[in-house]
Image (tube, rainbow, N blue to C red):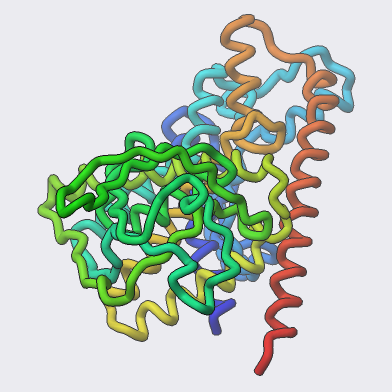
Length: 381
């Protein structure tokens, strides 16, 4: 059941992406031949104003088929020096319009993230967190062997972390969020320490460890269970929620780029990178567990994960790689600057690099999924 729920969620995001292409194509004068919900064999279809609207068998996203998308292949086969598109076709419009059509899909994913975070801010939610006073692992017998860069730098049990680099710290969630995305880095940690009954502000340079399995940073501190309290996020008013929608989207984009940078630090990629199977399973489990504790909790947890995935799709599709939307954006931009249509042979050879790149990503994601599935079957009962 979790897999089915996850597939539906991912399909909605892909459908929303293709809907962006569909709307932009219509606005830019490119004829849409077909627009499908789902992939594979067509179950139902109806032609309206020249567009064949379809419901297909496999519930995995959808597609937007535009007139002239295959003109590139035709020009290549006929050994032409440029792609000559017919009126109202993808290659028959100005490259600026072609760029807008390509950008519209990823932009729709971005819009969805803003809307999701807007709804979350309007709903509000409660969460539990410890305060920002830390303890060292050595204080607990079961944690004696955990390395602690914080201790090595001079931080003591009872210190209250108030800032990391320039980021203000309010509770343990802030500490975890910052440290987890700053693995194998020097972090300037500002603490408040009681000395002879008086608060003193001290600074320590801590070089975080990097967990090669998860890609998460660690500084070797723990928090007291006695300090765990319930806090609330929101609910915000309409305009405050709009602001939060953009703020949280911006933070998530920044976090995603930071996480991508961590992959180049020797992290075990097959563990840190999630493929479709793992993402689908995680999404399905999030929806099930969220709604089991109430409608609002289910809505918030589902939208939060969908927003994260949608932003990942936004960034992924804008990579300047042929086949992806970013490749079309790049080629359109080159045509606008040079005022010349690109030679289809040049595009063809560039596509090899793009296919190799996507193939490598597919293999990594597949290995990650296989590792995840293997873990599910080898878990102790």
